[in-house]
Amino acid sequence: MTTPTAALSAVGVSIWLDDLSRERIASGGLQNLIDNRNVVGVTTNPTIFATALAKGAAYDAQVAELAAAGKTVTEAVFEITTQDVANASEIFRPVYDATAGRDGRVSIEVEPGLAHDAAGTIAQAHELWAKVNRPNAMIKIPATVEGLEAIAAVTGAGISVNVTLIFSLERHRAVINAYLTGLETARAAGIDLATIHSVASFFVSRVDTEIDKRLEAIGSDEAIALKSTAGIANARLAYQVFEQAFDSERAKGLLAAGANKQRPLWASTGVKDPALPDTLYVTELAVAETVNTMPEKTLEATFDHGVITGDNVTAHYAAANATLDALEKLGISYDEVTALLEKEGVEKFIVSWNELLDTVSAALESAARGSQA
Image (cartoon, rainbow, N blue to C red):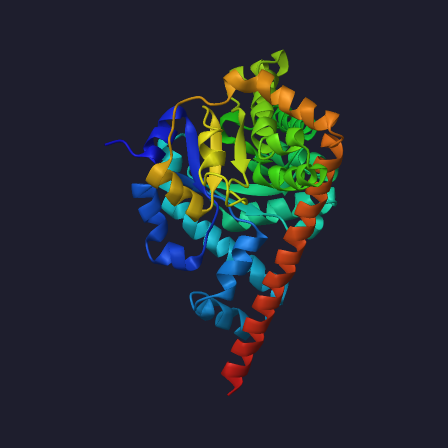
C-alpha cells in the first residue's frame, strides 16, 4: 500500500527533515527515515544544534578533544556542527547521486549575527562549504536585504544556497533575482551551472501565528473567519511567483545552459495552533517542484494520516489573492507583518546561537576540568 509520504513524493514534493543530531546519525535513525519515510534531505539551524548539544552524551568525546586542543567556543561550534553536516551528507550521498544533485541535501546556516553583514556572510559561506567539503551540502543564508548580495555572490562562486527566512512575495522575487544574478556570474566564470542547486525557504506557520493574533484582536465574524488562512495563501502565491520567474526569458536562457530552478521550500510547517489539523501545511501545499521541510512530529503525522490529493496549489491563486486582500481591508498590513517576522526570525536565531555558544562553553570548561582532575 502506498504511504502518504510516498504519495507526497509522487506529487513532486521532496521531503526534508527539519532536524539533525549526532545521536540521530549514529543510531541509524536518519537512515531509517530515508528508508521508511521518504526523507531525501535535512535542514538545520541554530535552534536545532542548540537542542542537540544540550542533551545526551553523543558530543562528549569531540568536546573533550576540542577542549584539550584549546579551541575557543566559536571554533568548537564550527567543528561540531560541520562534522554533523559532513556525516549526514555521507548518509544522503546515494540520494544526491540518484537525483543528480536535486536532493540528498544537508543545509548548514551561517551565523545569524551576520544576517545584516553581506561580506561576513560571503566569507563564512565559503568557510562552511570548504570545511564540510561535500557536494551535497547547502549553505543557508537569510533573505535580508544584505543577504541578497551574499546569495548572488555565493551562488556565483558555484556554491549551492538554501535561502532562509523568506516571508513576503516581494522578497521572494528579490531572492530569485539574486539567484539568477549568481548563475550569470557563475556562467561567465565557466562554472558548470548544473552543479549549482538552490531552494528558497518560504515560511508558513509563523505568518498565521502573527496574523491570527491580529484577527483575534479585531474579533469580528469576518476577522475570525480568516484565521489560519494567510500562511497557506501567501505560500501559494509564492509558488505563482516561482512559476512566473522561471518562465521569463532570462531564466529560460540560464536553464537552457544547464541551470536548475530555485525550488520553493515550505519551512515552518509544524502547526502552532492545536486546533488545526497537524498536517495542514503539508497537504495544502502539495505541488510539484517543491520541498517541504518538516519537524519529525509533522513528518510522522503525515506518514500516519496525511491525505494527499495531488496539486493543491496552482488552482487556488485567485482565492489566495482574495484572502490577502481581505486582510488588508481589515487593516492588517501585509508589509508590516512580513517585515516584523523577518526581524523576529533573525532575533530568534541569534538567541538560539547564543544558547548554543553557552552550552558548548560550559561543556568545554567541564571537559577541561575533567582532564585536570
